[in-house]
Length: 278
Image (cartoon, rainbow, N blue to C red; front, side, top):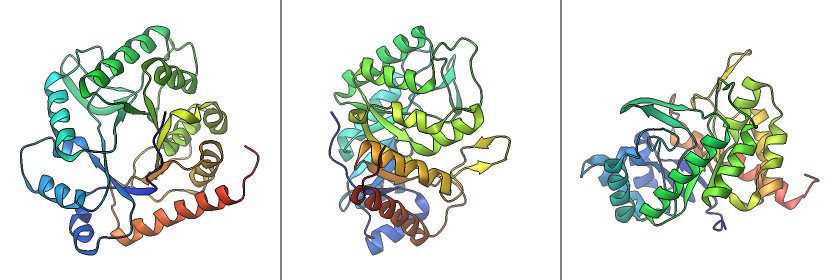
């Protein structure tokens, strides 16, 4: 079901365009935020094409709003499809969430109720998007801070059911699993153990803000030790999976992110060379 691993990548950020072009660092691939390049021309598109000449790319969206009750945004899909044809990414991803209602974009990734009705609704919409784009979609689990009283199952059960019914793939965000586990007091290992390895195409790692009583997925810190431990379990369970680090604020020099990515490489290599019980 899933494609072979691309190795270890980073999120492509404007702060690092020039460094990447001038130094061509030893990074396996980059993930570009779709919405930043769904325009005609401009400097971001210019840099994207230059980087695309030397590295595999994947596209990652934040505005598909696959879980919304609004109609799918055909203008958005048309622009995304044009970008896909232009840069030929290895794959395309977005989130298991809704981002707006009644035509208003909240610019946030809102969780879904884990109900049969929501499952059917979101799986049908993923199928329609895949049919339009003529390719599988990767769906990412989001961090969450509230629960719905209407939910009848656990998040990981819902996530598995969605990708099976829609016949899509997973972008498993290990940091989001940790954040939600802390916020909702569930066992993050139970979450990982429940995931179908055949569906996991990509892994996200990131930092967060820990306020003791709650955790916020801010992407402005280094990956913490607890998330590294979860990542090791993910490697035990899923084997070599394309892995990247996201950093969206408090962005350090490229070399610092490269060093952090080397930590991910070291953890993966250690687990794969010294198999442990899962």
